[in-house]
Length: 456
Image (cartoon, rainbow, N blue to C red; front, side, top):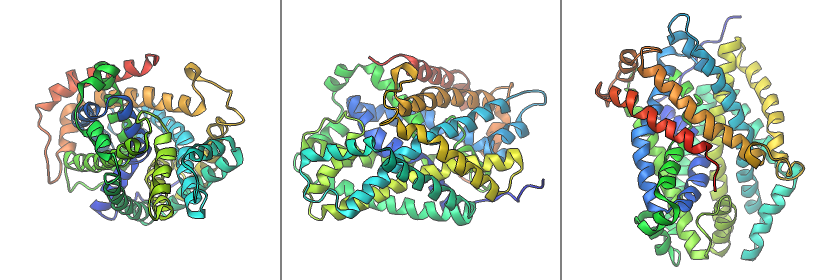
C-alpha cells in the first residue's frame, strides 16, 4: 500500500511550540512543584537546571537528530540509520509501547484537569469552605463514571485534532493552546506572589537553604532532580523523535533543543511561583502531591476576588497544558502506525482512538473499583504504569539513544554531529563527544539505579 506523503510543520514557531507542548504538561505544572517541595526547594531547582543543560538538552538533540536524519518515526528511523544486520529498531518498538503506556495514565490526569475546569465553570466551588475542597477531589476519584467520561473526552478530542493532520490539526491547535497557557500562567504567577505570606514560599523556592537539603539528603535531591529533568522532556521513548522527522534542515538541532528546553523550563519555574506562595499563604505542606493542584489552588481561587473566573481559566489552560502533551504523543502513535503498517491517517486515528479508550480504563478504575489492586512494589495502577515509563523506559531509552548516536556500534558520532550541526544557529562542538561517551552514560545509569531503589 502506498503511504501518504509525509507532512511537515507550517512554521518554525509551530515546531517549537508543539515540541515544547509535548514536554510541557503534568511534569511541569503538577509534578515539578511537589517534587521540588519534597526535595528541599531552591537547591533542587538549581540541580534541576544543571541537569537539564548537561543531560536533558543532549538527550533531546539525539532524539531529534534520529528523526530529522531519517524523516521517519522511530522504528523506521532506526532501520534507515542502523548498519546492515544490526537490530537497533527493536528498541523502536519498545518506544512505541512506552508511548502507549504513558497515555494509559496521562489521559486520566488530563481528564482531572478538564473535570476541574468544568467544576469551576459550573460553580461547584462557589461559597465552598476551605476544608470542603479536599472532598471534591476524593469524590471525583471514587466515581468511575465521572472519571471515564472526562478521560474519554480527552482521548476522543485528541484524535479528532490529529485527524486534520500535522499542520492543520496538531500545529494549529497547539499554537493557540501554548500561547494562551504562557499568557495565563504569567498572570497567575504575578497574582500568587501578591498573596499574604507569599514571601516565605518564594524564599523556600528560590533561596538555597542547606538545612532543607540536610533534612532530605543531598543524594536524594540530586537523583530526584536528574529524574525530573528526564521526565519533563519525555526523553527516552521517542515522543520527541517524531517532531524531528517533520523538521526542515534550516536550523541546527542544538539551537532548537535549547529553545524547547527554555520554554519548558520557563513554565516549570513559573508554576512553582504559583504553587509555593499559595502553599505558605494557606498553610499547606509544599511536599504534598496532587493536592498542590487539586486542593491548594482551588482554595486560593475561592478566596480571590473573581475566583470562579480565575479558577475556570486556570484549569482550562491546565487542560491545554496536558492536552498538548496528549496530542503530541498521540501523533507519535498515529505516525508510527502509518510508517510501520502503511495505514492512512484516518485509519490510524480510528484504530488508535479505540485502543486508547479501552487501554485507559484500568487507570480510571484504579481509584475506585480496582482500588485494592496493587502491582509493582505495592503501587496502584497509575503509579505502576508511571513507574514503568519514568523509572525504566525513559532512562534505558535515553541510554540506548546515546549509544546509538555516538558510538561505532550504532549510527556513529560523525554522522550524528553532521546532522546536529546542519543549518543556521548554535553548533555542537566535537569536543563534547568524549563527554557523551564516557560521562553522560554514567549519569543516566545512576538515574536508572536510583529509580529502582525502593523509597523509604
